[in-house]
Image 1 (cartoon, helix red, strand yellow):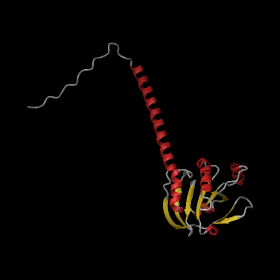
Image 2 (cartoon, rainbow, N blue to C red):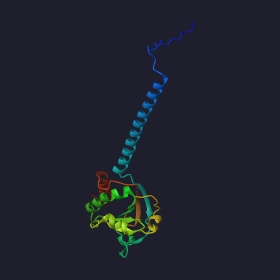
Image 3 (cartoon, helix red, strand yellow):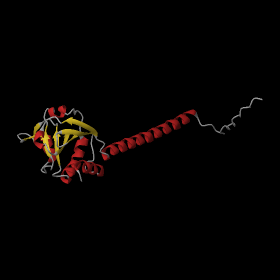
Image 4 (cartoon, rainbow, N blue to C red):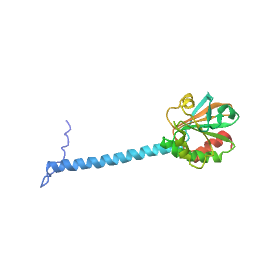
Length: 201
């Protein structure tokens, strides 16, 4: 004997039906509110992912010879050669004043340099076209790390860097052992733990 389908309960009609234009208006308002909530949630998720990326070191492990460079510390400044730092761990950081994440990140890089003074050599290499912007950025207070000028971006190109910031960790034998794509919280617990393991506590 075939089963009978249950008949849906009838929904009583309202005594005073809502006019169609009003229903449409309510629907549009609901969609706009929902869209705003979804947009806010998406922004929150993106910001969380950005924060998570900065909070974790998450380096790309490499084992490559570090391209040699010799760059000045500004116009007329004495050049610094990577080969002259052999025997040390070197953090090569490519940045620019027109890059907002780079500007925010340099303060954390300064803290890291102070904490690991004598154990890690930090080279912050700007690719700005004009050194005047760099001078205005630092103002009267010179950073603890070494600021170098890669005018023409030859050094950045030799490292395959086209987007900024990017950072490379070079071991005492002159090999790139890690690459950090994008900004990091260089003064955070994850960074200190990472360099503690790399450099030896």
